[in-house]
Every structure is written in C-alpha cells, then in structure tokens.
Amino acid sequence: MRTSWFARPWLWLVMALILEGTVLVAGQQDFVASDPLWYADIAHNVETGKVAVFTPEDHHPFVMRVGLTVPLAVFYKLFGVSTLVSNLPAILAGLACLLLVYLVAPTARAKAIGLGYALTCVALLHEAILLNIDLPCAALLGFSVWFMQRRDEHRLWLLAAVVGAFCAFLVKETAVWCAPIWLWAVIVDVRELGVRGAARRFAPAVIAGAVLIAGYLIACAYVWGTPFARFDGIREITFEHAWTLQGQPASAWVSRLTWEVPWLLRKMFRAALIPALLAPWLVRPRDRIWVVAAATFLACYWFGSASTSAYTPLPITERMVLSVLPPLLVLATLATDAAIERWRTRRWFQIVAAVLALTLIVPAVITDAGVVRHPTPETDAFARFRATLPAEPAALVCADGRGPMIANFYFQFEPPPTLQLVPAADYPTMSRPPGLHVYALVNELREHDAKLAAKIDALHLRAIYRSAHVRLYDAGDGATLAEALR
Image 1 (tube, one colour):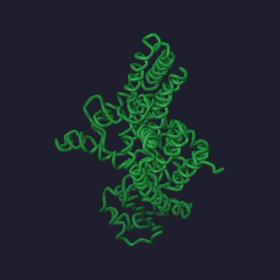
Image 2 (cartoon, one colour):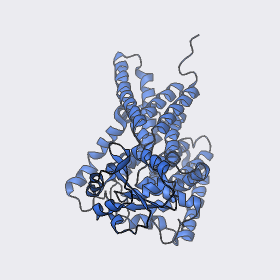
Image 3 (cartoon, rainbow, N blue to C red):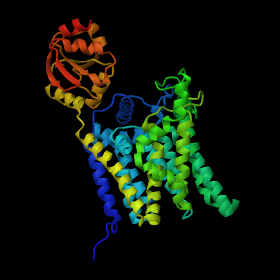
Image 4 (tube, rainbow, N blue to C red):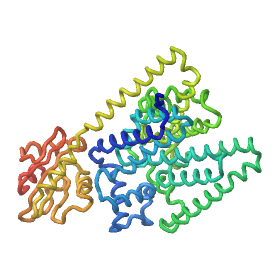
C-alpha cells in the first residue's frame, strides 16, 4: 500500500526545521553596527559584570529589554561571543514560528501547508538571521495567542498565555498590543458561559497576571527608582528617532497612514496574503482568534504610536510589523486547508493553487540562495586582521565613526590591550607612541563621511584585505595617514 505524504507530519516538521535552520546558519552575514550591536554589547556586559548595566540613571528601552539581552548573555556565557551566537535569539524565534504554525494546524495536510508557507516566507528569513527584538517578541505573542485559543481545554492554557505575553513584554513593549485579544476572549466566554463561568475560567490567569505585573513594577522601582521606568524611557526618546514623522510634510503622514502599510505587507507575504484575507470566511469559529490577533496587531502598528507623549507612528520597515507574521501564516494555512476541502475537485482551483505555490516558491528559493551566497567582507577582513595583528602596539583607524564599536565586537568585546580602535576623524590628533603599527579600515556600506574613506584609499597603502566595499590597509607607522586625514 502506498504511504501518504501526510502520514507522518512530525517527519515534515523535522525536515522543515533542519532545512530552515541550515539556511539561517549558512546565511550569517556581517554584524550590523546599530541596534543589534547595542543589544550584543548590553548582553556582554550582563554576562561579564564588568560594566553596570542596570542603573537608575539609564532608562533607555534597550537596557530594559531583558527578555532579549539576559538570554543572550547566557548564550555568551555558554558559547562565547560570535556573530552566530549573537543571532541565536532570532534564529530560534524563526524556528519557533515554524513550530507554531505546525502546532496550530488541525490536520496533517494543514501542517504540511503551514510548513510550506513558513518556509517560503521571505520576511521570516530576512528577520531570523539578525539579532533584534521584533521576531522573538512576535514568536512569543504567537504562542500566547495559541495558548489562549486552547482555553476551553483547561485553565492552565490561560496561565501559559499570560506567561507568554509577559515574556514578550520583557522583550519589547509592543507586547501590550495583545490586550484587545484578551478583551475579545473575555467577551466571547461571557456570552458562552455567563459571567460566573467566564470568571472561573479567567481567575487563575488574572491572578497570575497581577502578580507578574506587580513583581515587575516592584523590580523596576528597586532597580531604576520608579515603577514606570520602562515608560519613562520610551517617552524620553520620543524625538530622538531618525524615522519620526514629527516636522514632516502632510504628504508623508498621509502616505504612512494609508497605502504604505498595505504595500509593505504585500512585499512581505506576497501571495500568502490572499488566503489570509479570505480566512474570516473560511476558518472555523474556534480559529477566529487568529483573525482577531492579526487585525489587532496590524491596527496597532498601522495607527498606533511609539510614544505616549506625542503621536509617533512606527516606521515602514518589515521588522516593525512582525507581530502580524505568526497570525497571518496561521490564517493562510487554515484558509488554504479549508479551501482545499471545499474546492479541491474544481479545475479552476487547482490552477489557482499551482500559480499561488509558484509565486511563493520561486522568490523563496531565490532569496534563500542569495542569503546563503551573501558575502561577509567585514567579517573576513577582521579574521585576516586578527591573524596578522603584531604583538607590538597597534592602532586600527576606522573611516566611519561606528567602526571602533563593530571592531570591538569582532574581538569578542575584549580587544588586545596593545590595540587602539580609533575613528579616522580623531586619528590626526591622537598621541602615537614610537613603534606603533597602524592599520586602516574602510567600509563603504557604512560610510557617513565619504571624504575620509576617499583620503585613505588615495594613499595607495598595502592592502591586507580587499573586496568590493571593504578594504583593510597596512599604514605602517601611520605618519602618512595622519597627514592625509589632518
């Protein structure tokens, strides 16, 4: 007897996790000298304890996102500092999204469909190869919604939903977006069970939530001097964001609040948006919590604010709307499975399904291949630099201001005591002891002052490493370099 392709769905899960994990590990790229580097630095300081991280003077939200930095500190303790280890939270969150879609899907066929949607989701791939808060928060919120969906099975599922939402909040503040979903669940259960029945079901979760919130506020008051330090930090940086619309023309506001969000979703999810949009008419009543979750997260991103002190819509970047990724993948899965059940014998449906599959698979394969083959010039340059670094005093002059920070990362946050990391703008006035060996690094992909890079390139120094955008030079005693940069 021929074995059905869907007879062993767990095998498909294992294969999908291996495939996605392989692509994510093989697709590691140069580390980014912005938010990911900041989180990595905080995690390293937590792990070593050499620098006080949690102080009453620092209310910055990055410092308070302990749901990301503390687990990363544990990874650093276990495996050391590297690009791959730094990106582990994102990688694990990406794999967790695959697992979530598999677990939510009710049938073996639906599980296979869901894994297909997750594996071909280019947004998931983009965000799972780089350390950040958005995908881990989205994965935790997705599991919280799934736990809430199962509340009619046992009250412990609601406890798990509370814990999941709280952990998501420790990662990123936008976890508060799940509040309307809880309100919807309460209203549904009150209609079904009555006030007393709903109260009995939700009581343990409410108590647990109150304890967690109270404990968190007390901890904030103890560490940062105020229970609302997290929200104070958000308010303090309201106008520091480079992407804020404050002061922008009305056309920028209109674009952001109208067509830009749908266009972003189209680029992120492509053809998977079609079944997801049809899901309200196709999914079972028990699954409509995912419709509520997707609509809630999308509305909060589309029209919400990043601050309470001024209306500041979040920017049009895919990582900012990742909270909708798990619900949309789940809805696309459930709707497609339901559509197959209704129309699988129809010729038109078979053609539509084939076209939809191709429009997902082809871009995904191209993206996967591009990620795996993506060069890592800065990583390679620092590997060469570490191998050739002399024992005597040396200095690395970086053409861009963030160069010393990323260089510190590539030395596992502990560069040799004989090495100085210097921005090019500061090098001419730096004291250079006799015998100092000077190197220069140019990264065109991160330049803010192209003139400094051009001056370094114009010296025609001996290149230790050279690629299309990254160059590492041996500047000898550095006198010529200092004169050129003066």
